Length: 128
Image (cartoon, rainbow, N blue to C red; front, top):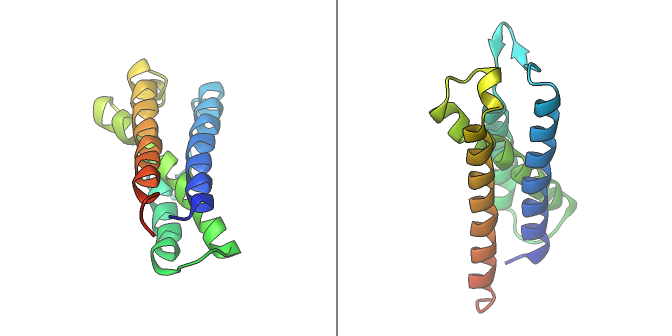
Protein backbone atom coordinates (compact mmCIF):
# COMPACT_ATOMS: atom_id res chain seq x y z
CA UNK A 1 0.00 0.00 0.00
CA UNK A 2 1.18 3.51 -0.79
CA UNK A 3 1.37 5.22 2.60
CA UNK A 4 1.46 8.69 1.03
CA UNK A 5 -1.69 7.99 -0.97
CA UNK A 6 -3.51 6.70 2.12
CA UNK A 7 -2.51 9.77 4.14
CA UNK A 8 -3.63 12.14 1.36
CA UNK A 9 -7.01 10.43 1.05
CA UNK A 10 -7.69 10.43 4.81
CA UNK A 11 -6.46 14.01 5.25
CA UNK A 12 -8.68 15.22 2.39
CA UNK A 13 -11.61 13.18 3.75
CA UNK A 14 -11.44 14.73 7.22
CA UNK A 15 -10.48 18.25 6.11
CA UNK A 16 -13.27 18.44 3.53
CA UNK A 17 -15.84 17.21 6.05
CA UNK A 18 -14.78 19.76 8.69
CA UNK A 19 -14.63 22.65 6.19
CA UNK A 20 -17.97 21.77 4.55
CA UNK A 21 -19.76 21.36 7.88
CA UNK A 22 -18.28 24.61 9.19
CA UNK A 23 -19.21 26.59 6.09
CA UNK A 24 -22.76 25.23 5.93
CA UNK A 25 -23.28 25.74 9.67
CA UNK A 26 -22.46 29.43 9.21
CA UNK A 27 -24.49 29.76 6.01
CA UNK A 28 -27.06 26.94 5.90
CA UNK A 29 -29.01 28.36 2.97
CA UNK A 30 -26.08 28.25 0.55
CA UNK A 31 -27.35 26.13 -2.30
CA UNK A 32 -25.62 25.03 -5.49
CA UNK A 33 -28.30 25.35 -8.15
CA UNK A 34 -27.87 24.40 -11.80
CA UNK A 35 -30.68 25.22 -14.25
CA UNK A 36 -33.17 25.34 -11.40
CA UNK A 37 -32.04 22.08 -9.77
CA UNK A 38 -30.55 21.98 -6.28
CA UNK A 39 -27.39 19.89 -6.49
CA UNK A 40 -26.57 18.41 -3.08
CA UNK A 41 -22.89 17.95 -2.33
CA UNK A 42 -23.52 14.19 -2.35
CA UNK A 43 -23.73 14.38 -6.14
CA UNK A 44 -20.69 16.63 -6.51
CA UNK A 45 -18.86 14.12 -4.32
CA UNK A 46 -19.89 11.23 -6.57
CA UNK A 47 -18.48 13.07 -9.59
CA UNK A 48 -15.18 13.62 -7.76
CA UNK A 49 -15.06 9.99 -6.61
CA UNK A 50 -15.55 8.83 -10.21
CA UNK A 51 -13.11 11.30 -11.78
CA UNK A 52 -10.39 10.71 -9.18
CA UNK A 53 -11.02 7.06 -8.35
CA UNK A 54 -10.43 5.88 -11.92
CA UNK A 55 -6.79 7.07 -12.09
CA UNK A 56 -6.17 5.61 -8.62
CA UNK A 57 -7.49 2.24 -9.75
CA UNK A 58 -5.74 2.25 -13.12
CA UNK A 59 -2.35 3.93 -12.58
CA UNK A 60 0.35 2.37 -10.43
CA UNK A 61 3.12 4.26 -8.72
CA UNK A 62 3.35 7.76 -7.39
CA UNK A 63 3.04 10.90 -9.45
CA UNK A 64 1.46 14.33 -9.25
CA UNK A 65 -1.60 12.79 -10.95
CA UNK A 66 -2.08 10.15 -8.26
CA UNK A 67 -1.49 12.76 -5.54
CA UNK A 68 -4.15 15.06 -7.00
CA UNK A 69 -6.47 12.10 -7.57
CA UNK A 70 -5.97 10.97 -3.95
CA UNK A 71 -6.94 14.39 -2.60
CA UNK A 72 -9.92 14.62 -4.98
CA UNK A 73 -11.06 11.11 -4.08
CA UNK A 74 -10.90 11.84 -0.35
CA UNK A 75 -12.73 15.15 -0.79
CA UNK A 76 -15.42 13.54 -2.95
CA UNK A 77 -15.87 10.73 -0.46
CA UNK A 78 -16.33 13.24 2.36
CA UNK A 79 -18.91 15.18 0.36
CA UNK A 80 -20.88 12.03 -0.45
CA UNK A 81 -20.70 10.42 2.99
CA UNK A 82 -21.58 13.66 4.77
CA UNK A 83 -25.01 13.71 3.13
CA UNK A 84 -25.72 9.98 3.13
CA UNK A 85 -27.49 9.76 6.51
CA UNK A 86 -28.89 13.30 6.16
CA UNK A 87 -30.75 12.46 2.95
CA UNK A 88 -32.00 9.14 4.32
CA UNK A 89 -33.05 10.26 7.82
CA UNK A 90 -34.40 13.77 7.16
CA UNK A 91 -36.57 15.62 4.66
CA UNK A 92 -33.47 16.97 2.87
CA UNK A 93 -34.13 20.61 3.74
CA UNK A 94 -31.44 23.13 4.62
CA UNK A 95 -32.78 23.29 8.19
CA UNK A 96 -32.56 19.49 8.51
CA UNK A 97 -28.87 19.59 7.57
CA UNK A 98 -28.26 21.35 10.89
CA UNK A 99 -30.05 18.68 12.94
CA UNK A 100 -27.99 16.49 15.30
CA UNK A 101 -28.93 13.33 13.34
CA UNK A 102 -27.32 14.83 10.25
CA UNK A 103 -24.11 15.80 12.04
CA UNK A 104 -23.86 12.49 13.89
CA UNK A 105 -24.50 10.61 10.65
CA UNK A 106 -21.80 12.56 8.84
CA UNK A 107 -19.29 12.05 11.66
CA UNK A 108 -20.14 8.34 11.79
CA UNK A 109 -19.81 7.76 8.04
CA UNK A 110 -16.62 9.80 7.59
CA UNK A 111 -15.18 8.20 10.73
CA UNK A 112 -15.96 4.72 9.43
CA UNK A 113 -14.31 5.54 6.10
CA UNK A 114 -11.18 6.79 7.88
CA UNK A 115 -11.19 3.69 10.10
CA UNK A 116 -11.58 1.48 7.02
CA UNK A 117 -8.54 3.16 5.45
CA UNK A 118 -6.58 2.50 8.66
CA UNK A 119 -7.64 -1.16 8.74
CA UNK A 120 -6.62 -1.60 5.08
CA UNK A 121 -3.29 0.08 5.80
CA UNK A 122 -2.59 -2.16 8.80
CA UNK A 123 -3.66 -5.27 6.89
CA UNK A 124 -1.32 -4.38 4.02
CA UNK A 125 1.78 -3.93 6.19
CA UNK A 126 2.63 -7.60 6.00
CA UNK A 127 2.01 -7.86 2.23
CA UNK A 128 4.16 -6.57 -0.62
